Image (tube, rainbow, N blue to C red):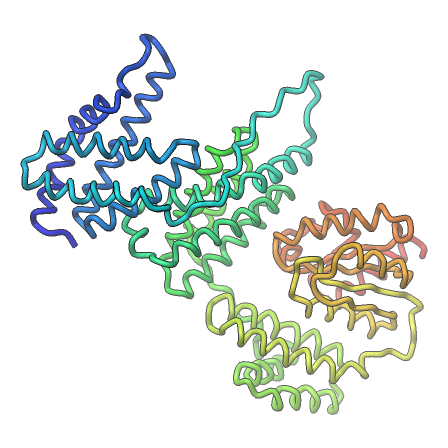
Length: 508
């Protein structure tokens, strides 16, 4: 909180804002421009706006945390300006000019209060800012116009914009964090070590945004934003933080990319912000007692959350011994419980360690049931199932493989994060009829597309049926078409029916 003297100094700064800005501009020579030069007028307006922002930030700091807050504002302003190619020395010169103007126009006692904060900010510039990328990417130049008058296909424009996002991400991520803290200098001081996490989050946001833009699916990024919002809220953070950060991200993209490349990502960000500000809708539990085998699922989930592996395994074993079909255990117990474990982690009701432990119990239960999965009546078909390269969540792909095994198929489950080349070699070696690929996050979709393209280009397996599944495909119904797959299904059991239908349609 401010003191009476600091409050008076802040009032005086704001009352004299215009004269202070004019005097500072005069000192740094920004008013000297060529007569009639449009660029000069634009430069003068920008400098006037920047110095006005410094006055506002200084006044806000004096009312709140004082010199430390203003020094943080200076640090993040320096990072942001460096991202635009403005040297840190230019900010230092502006602060010096503002300090001299304050010394002339404010009473000595009030001037001393303001000068102390200005001096702290000036000293802060001599140290490395808190968020500084190792190297800032160049802003991509406007591509040359096509002389033949041909139009770029819509898919090509989307891919170009996605590639541009990936190319400037090393620059845009720190720019967006710096811009966000410039707008909320008080947060820069309060957040402390969380500032580094903001930079990491910005990189994740850009990865997800690029995936959604490439696939032309705003809903994919909107769903991701909902998930992040739920996670932040569960940590007790202000929901407005994500909205503010996505707004800063859109503004940084507008500065780093030409208009024709910035339009789609900014539109997707705006849609996500609209979605977030429309009101949070809680995700209901995936385990309900009135569902098929719902009571068993509730008991099994309780055993998982209590860490009682013996009880969880016993519940499943006794149900199977009582005549419950194994496929029903998969569909109505394992699958909804895994979704629920994910929801509980997302809402911060369980930790990552607890989520891993619960999943490990279910994997153990799957292993115990595995001898019962085999169907004596073989279908004469082969499946290769895998989690795409980069996807460390493997249990969904295993569900799929086991359902195909129960349908009489010979299955080859490759596990998590399998490189594309190894998947293709295995499909060819096993002479697979179907390749099932699992993806968990939007950022995995490029790898899915690359794997499908590699399969189509390889003469050994160009005719294999490719099925895809996972959360992105449940969010966007026809996403599988855009990636070049042959089909998708929301459940593992449904994937068997889709595969059988596609092979029948081919007469295979």
